[in-house]
Image 1 (tube, rainbow over the protein chains, first blue to last red):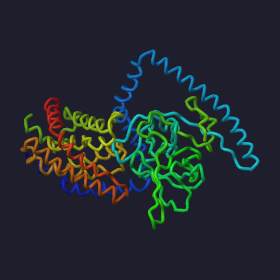
Image 2: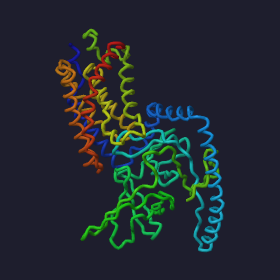
Image 3: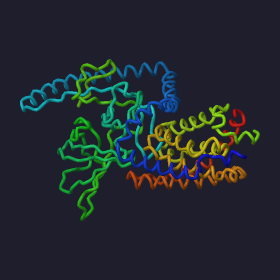
Image 4: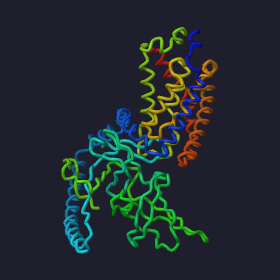
Length: 290
Length: 174
């Protein structure tokens, strides 16, 4: 029992000091980005834990497809082929429109933004904390992913990369409380900012004045203001519009376009301002319309 | 295990056979926290998932307070913040408080029945959840769902199994 009394420092003092250190760290890391480099370096070290945790899910997903009946797979394949053909046909028309758009833009003297390069990533993990909306994807610094990179899926905007380690990235979803994205309505080009609510199916808009022309069903697309998100990706659809008598602003709720609960694969959009011709690897697929 | 061995601190013999089981159990707890629920499960179920890391930490502080103490709890919290994606220090305060409480009272707590320990753990976890709620709302201005106060209760329900499993591991490998 003797060693009990030989402790070098009192555990109570240790606890008080470490509590204060925790609080300090929490404020610094919660409010600023100054600790991001440390998080990034240390995050690469703990990556294996995350891979281990998502392993069962990935095995289950691949195992299921392995045991799928061959007939069913054949059926799916033919369906996919038909879909690809349809899309290709539509793409023809799209290319013509794009060329026309570029000509018109050239006449106006404004620079044309054709399409963005995208990289397909698999969603491997979901936030264990329901109040934080993010997913982990299997692409990281190694693949050229950068913090702030926009992330989309086939149906619309998903969110943006907030942390990236060697092989993994954390994608903050548009529904997270701390997320906001500048949008405009397709119908009227009204400029708005869509914010996450912490609810997986809801987005909200602040400061919508009563004179603004916005109705239920309006589709909101990224406006490109703020330079973070490329313009033109659908974000949400207005779901509810309520103007209380006497209130200065209307309460507007919108529903995100992409299925954020059941994300499987997402597309990381590369900034078209960066010259990607040189580092466009075979994994990158060009031509997400943007 | 002979009680005499309990008082051999890590300073005296840092490579005591079996230290790995402490690290391995903590890593396992992290994996359990991170494993995504099946997509078919209702999303709110996530609020009910026990706080595995805190449970395992409490066990090791109670079982070997001279090896796992407040500083280890703080290091563990930084790693937890990294894998869970919370700002540094979010788990720090709660783990340090839990470890300090456990270390201050392990002699009494060890004497209790397992279900009595469960109740104590529910109370302690409830207190630290309250602190975490205050921290997030006051300092970084995020709101949290009050359903998270169910976590301490489910954690307490899982405590007997964690306790029995880890005691088995400790007796077997340490």
